[in-house]
Length: 71
Image (tube, rainbow, N blue to C red):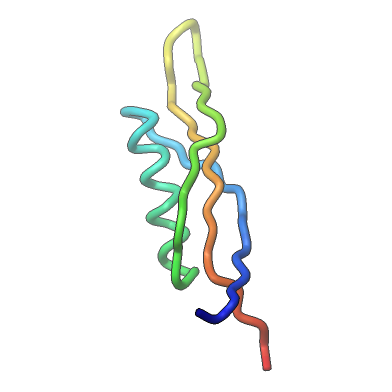
């Protein structure tokens, strides 16, 4: 098996409905511009509050993808 290298980036997805949808939004957006996504890890969850109520959910997600050097 050939050796591989993966790059990890951190994204923050948001949703007005749930943390799950916030995380999914981050992965969906990453998949639009990155190829060969491998793993997504939720590293932090929080909420944006306004007047004591939840305004939105945020999920900090680490996404890894195969690193391909320019030859």
